Image (tube, rainbow, N blue to C red; front, side, top):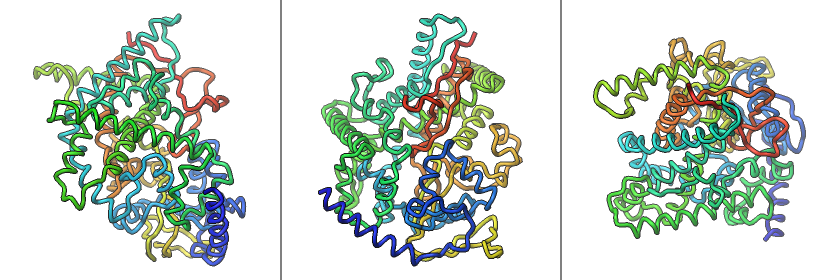
Length: 536
């Protein structure tokens, strides 16, 4: 098997070199010099000390659209231009496919999920899954969000009370948030109690499969793997199928997670089938019911349903936990913003009590203007996926909101591209464009969402942000994520004060997702230590 893959790799390598030597569609587009013939700038970008710093530098030098060399001399178009992103992700979304490397990497850990579908299959998957993520359905999940957040709150209080210092203690908030969001997902998605928050998932194989999954698989990829992956687009699917059997850490971790998730999915389906409650409103029950009501020719197969479960398990908890982690990190530096949120919570509770409600409703959460501005700001400042990659399915012309100057001195307002052109959408860069977010775009400032001075546009599915992607492939669970963040943030800020500990430096690293790590302790994996104390 490995010998066969090796032969295909060599043949593909020869073809890649020949093809890239003949394609120079972007030769007049400015960009950083190539750091290596073999690796281009790919290795440098993936090994950056802080995620996004190189892109922020390049957008200042070349504008929001530039060209950077990939492996084997490939010319990759990078853009953060809002009109270009609108065209690629929304106007002509199905004309720009996900790149093979991204698709096959995702397939390794989610299987045949909605995340890897092409333009023919994606509408079918989306149509069947949509009923489980409607606004009315999600509002029924709020009590679960609030209850799980309260359990996390009590766990932190127990940790603090058992400590030696009355002013609080250092807690790795990233770890416990991930445990809580997995428990939440178990209840709302599968009507199942994972119970990992109580024992930190010590005996849970799913938790063990999750631990540092993306750090072990995607952080600082070796050069050989970058070169190998650059040939994937020329390999047949029959060969790519065997990637999951490769005996290397990058592939073993994803394969192990996928096997564990599928095994968990089968057990959950069996548990549901044996139950007596036939009116369940959890996500999986609604998905299965929606599938049964679909024409037989369009139904999801068993493999596809299990793959959606694998996707829900990772995307439904890890991304939300990471975003909440970054949110507490930023708030830990601004005590006055924490107090401002508490004041909003107090006012909202008074209104709820006045009308006879025991707890806050979704409308109360949505009415907390500063609290929601903080959530929007963390999604802007720390997008969980710093880049998204696409490839043109045909010759096209990409419009630009901000004209760019070429090497030859021309000012161009649109960019002709050829079929197969690789495109990297720099989400972290778009989310910091001064033309959109103001002169302080590089700084944390939730008030930008309140003062009305930002450029008005409608990119993305939420708050003009690209964090949940955009258009026809926009994140199907974005409303779920926002409501969960609202509920958890209210619980934690109402009960705790957060401070950033002295002598700690947090770095942002790209492991497919934006991962927080402590400088000098990268070997310990993702973590976010914060000083946590109970509100007096």
